[in-house]
Image (tube, rainbow, N blue to C red):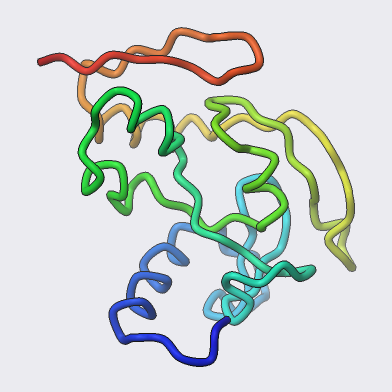
Length: 150
């Protein structure tokens, strides 16, 4: 985590952090799990470390921008998740399935490339966020496209 940050930045990170998965018997203020199964540490935000994390868009930002969705709607907290920096890089613009890069093996985050799907509950949240106009049409190996009702 960078040494100097604003109160607004810190509050933003905290709100996104709450969307991470709570791990039983571990302090959720310090450590959570991303959707791909990697452990992340709050204080390692922005670091490319074993437990470093970034803010990812559940429904990819680029796909939403291509459809003309306003940035404030793209960055709605319901669409933001904390994700291990390597998993975020491997997820890229893919939705609803993507490839993970690392997972927690009980002692460390280890390389483990596997197919992951955005959870059904998160898909419903995304559909509610972008309305009935969200159309998901699979495009092989390139994510999906959709149209918003006007």
